Length: 94
Image (cartoon, rainbow, N blue to C red; front, side, top):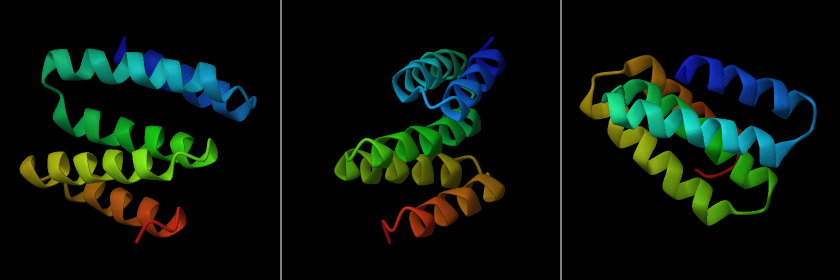
């Protein structure tokens, strides 16, 4: 279910509906937290950070990316850690 919600979030984002996209990612993240799927939580936090920047909430984006990096590091999720680094650069939060 968390994957379905994540992909619905991508679809809503592509359609320009940021609030709906964010809601899907938040719901997916909540489920992933409940399951203890920490790499998945980290991946979702990256997207939530991107939405935050698009909605001019840069401080929130920075906090989300910090948590994503911590989760990726603690689970040895090197690929997701690279995504966090890329998002920081892309969003100019370096």
